Image 1 (cartoon, rainbow, N blue to C red):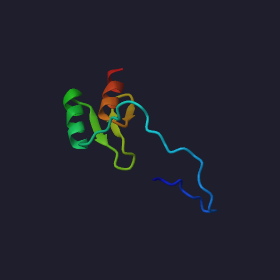
Image 2: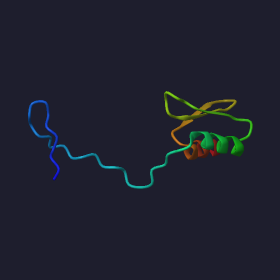
Image 3: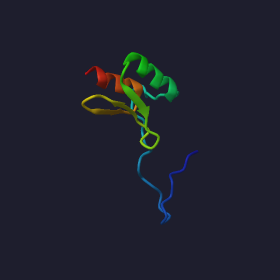
Image 4: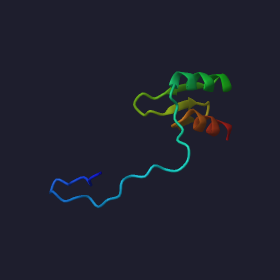
Length: 79
């Protein structure tokens, strides 16, 4: 049996539990492999993973590109 969390005033929360979005969740489990794959697919472009931002980055001659996953970054580079 589950219980609704109590607020600091002793009242139970009536807010619904968070719902995960439908569809496939894309994450890069191996960042080093994701970066290697990007470097192989796009030679000559500088790629890195931002430790603090958690994003993948690409430095192009005219812009800086950020994405949460390698697939998203690759899509942006193809556009």
